[in-house]
Amino acid sequence: MTARIRGDGDRERWRDRGGRAEERYIDEEDEEAVSAAEAAREGLRQIVALTGRDPLGITSIQPTDDGWLIGVEVVEDHRIPASTDLLGLYEVELDMTGSLLGYRRTRRYQRGKGD
Image (cartoon, rainbow, N blue to C red; front, top):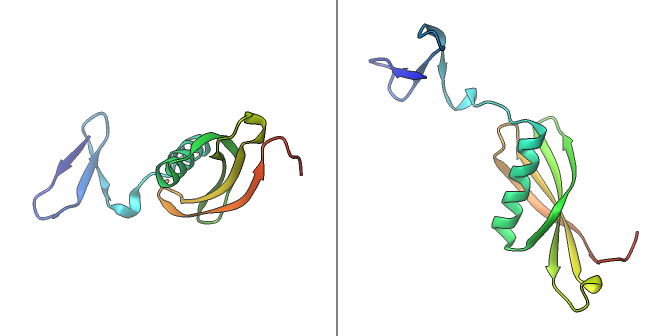
């Protein structure tokens, strides 16, 4: 729960469940870091929103100094039979709060073709 304090502008003061005000303020810098699972879901959501491609799933997640690096596999081109679909592997970079920093396609390949 938060409460406005006169003179603090857009800052809010944090109140714990007991209603006591703490001596810290909620600013942009105080945003809570996301967990690995949350970062993975957000990375997948971002790729789908940016590319409009059908997601297959998350292939990797790795913590970095600044946040998270998530690997997402998508269907780039549906073909018949499905075993010949073109797939893409994207790398999504998020900051510690789950905000998108960047993304790129790292690989494009045919389904069923191994490394």
